Image (tube, rainbow, N blue to C red; front, side):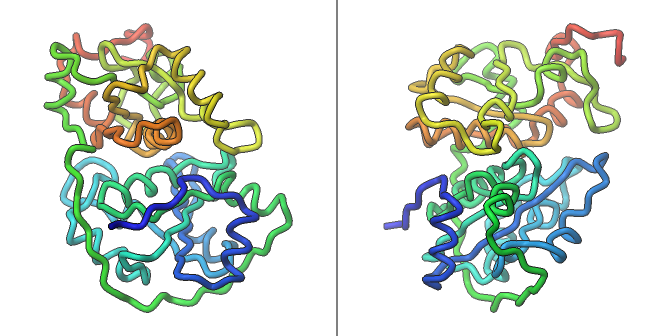
Amino acid sequence: MALQARALLTSKWLAEAVKAQGKMRILDTSWYLPKLRRNAKSEFKKRHIPGAAFFDIDQCCDKTSPLDHMLPSEEIFADYVGNLGIESDTHVVLYDASEFGAFSAPRVWWMFRVFGHSAVSLLNGGLRNWELEGRPISDKYVRPTPTEFKASLNRTWIRTYEDILENLDSKKFQVVDARPAGRFKGVDPEPRDNTEPGHIPGSISIPFHSFLSQSGHFLPKEQLQALFARAGVDLSCPICVLCGSAVTACHVALAAHECGNPGVSVYDGSWSEWYTRAVPEHVISEGRGKHW
């Protein structure tokens, strides 16, 4: 039976676990939109949680796809993760250095789970709160000893463009978009070139930062449930999530998991693919003409 782990961990728990030196691997999963001009790997080399390795979503991906950081094959994921010293019984703890407290880490949390590894957790509050609490930071890095990792892709947690297109009529699942409200409505620009804002017909907007407190921690379960309810999302029914490129979409998946719905699927191509392939009537925008 696969090892299970709580989705969210406190910095206190992690600090004590590091001292205990159990079978655990900490990963810095930081990633930023290109227009921010931040180099996540360079920042990692200068400051990271002691013992952490770096997970690069732009390297562990399908490099044959024209879309950003699409899921890799089982073989590529297993090879990449194995080279980080992770085995099937390793507890993986993820964080990122975003000022939000969590930005790209939920994506990697979902990646491990979709490839069959449930012993994966997120440091609630991220590096931001780890530092605020005065916990240790290091610039030293010891390359992990490569090992063998076995990946088994759960294809039911992945949605394609064709799945979303068919769902416009069948309405088999709810579609939740985690981009900021202005991009969803079509009144604020997209951060990527050649992509305009708007949304998929019938989709529901819950911006990813809504799931986080001002301190950068995920909201308690009761508040997450209320957030979904206010948006009109039924947690007892199937949910598919998206954003610009399926990174912050995974905040929705993690929040739903915390509320008892662990099987949320992700539209991996997300808005970047939908805008490119959809016919004009399938791009809903209040600001059409402003950005076109």
